[in-house]
Image (cartoon, rainbow, N blue to C red; front, side, top):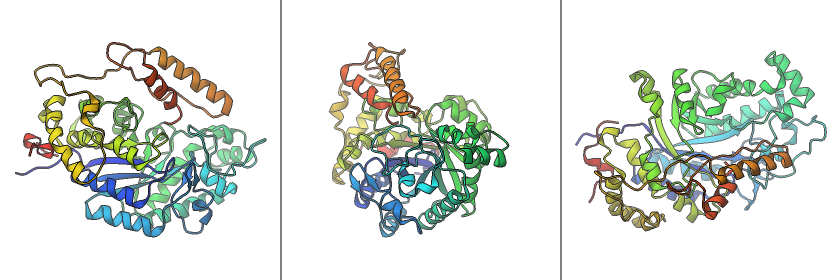
Length: 450
């Protein structure tokens, strides 16, 4: 049988900044990925809550900057090289992410001189953030910052052979820049604009630093709207499919990580929702072959604000990753139904058991009565805004007013197709959610019954 995948990028993401998972935990995840032909591992190594990556010349990053909610923990150079080699043996490429110029509280705690220190009344962080959400701290547009970033991406390129490096670029507040005379002057000098446009400077400069190492940058989708982003920077689409259309229309490559289906840490998102989501966005399907080819594939996301243990990481990732793997490999015209996939999945989860990988038991999805392909299968639908959604907006606004940082509601999920008002369990989930944030595959051989 000759067989090739529908998409070249078939990935899984793990956030190790909110909670830490050691190298052996990561290798267990890679081992399971390889079994189901997932070939990209997105390693989210830095954020407001911790910096887990050693950078030559900046030792405090993995001392002060690594002091997260679960203590001081980070990877060594040997850890990273071991994981990279382990992944390569399994034909998995690791995408490292160092998120800038926002999400940098941990870095600013380690090296305060990288921040906007002239902002009146600004309190210099003494430690990484211990709360979730978007924090105001941003890198200052200074020579010292650029020297730091140059060394960061040099170290990253030395440790990771990937053709790609993720630069973040998401959820960047401009409040500090607007209140910093140094930032205001830099904006006028560098951009001829006011300080709220300073992300353009970082969107232009960071990909250049990455390109200097013969790598290509990837940024979260909001970066494409703010100006300055080089045309060859790929976009990781997480907020809505429209961003994929706009990126491909601009000639950019795209990886789909839509939070409405591929955020695996969201416990109310069903297995069926993952399977029913076509990685090729609807608004790109109607474009020509050249434009469609810019969609490299997709990946599942495991954000770990509410996932403190390796067990919970595995329960979030599996078996949803198996549903994702089939959709990324199998042509859409070969997809029969969720019920068809579910029948085969019940046989294939034995692979996870053999690898001692924990997964959410299928009975817990309540799909034992899923009907055949000629009938409508059970599904979770999106509904009109509910009372829970409105409450989430109110809580997010209150949090914004209290912290001075912009916090926005991150999702709207109905508890059931019949009732758009969420149950108490789903309401609690919604209230926490704002804090975060290949060719025809005959017979679905990837998950064929054996």
